[in-house]
Image 1: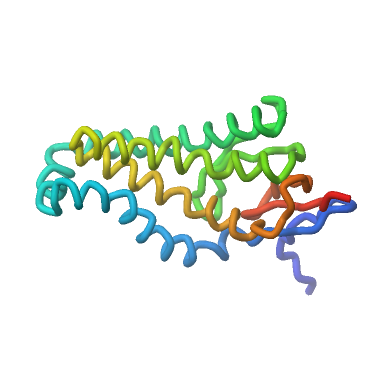
Image 2: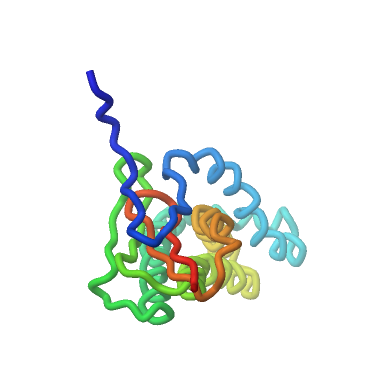
Length: 191
């Protein structure tokens, strides 16, 4: 009997693989989520207090929270696309969206190569736009539910932060090609 387990696609000629299977990042992502949720909440707690946060964060707002998180996750993937489209010079047809069947993870996949600097920008933008920005606005206006939504969406970028860590040594002008199955990419180092 032969082993028929699916394997990751081989890198294109001239590229090396800097990725890990999505199933391998589950524990790391889960552990990384906790500090990423807490970090954006600290300013709110310092300004208004722990009790003020907890007494307002969940006050009849579960529907708001659920809707905002679902919309935020969709926006997160859209912000990846916008970042890669404009910073990477990609066409809209170079981008696809979906949900990984094994992990349930939503994704935006760039099917064309771009410079590492553009890839990094597109990877980090959702954590700022859908996470930190709402958390900061919520803190500025003393809105605990908005602050908490921002914190949760910031933590949703844990996989993006892991990918950024994996490619931390890649030169900014190297070409990266988003991996079609794994978290990470293929890298073609600059000459």
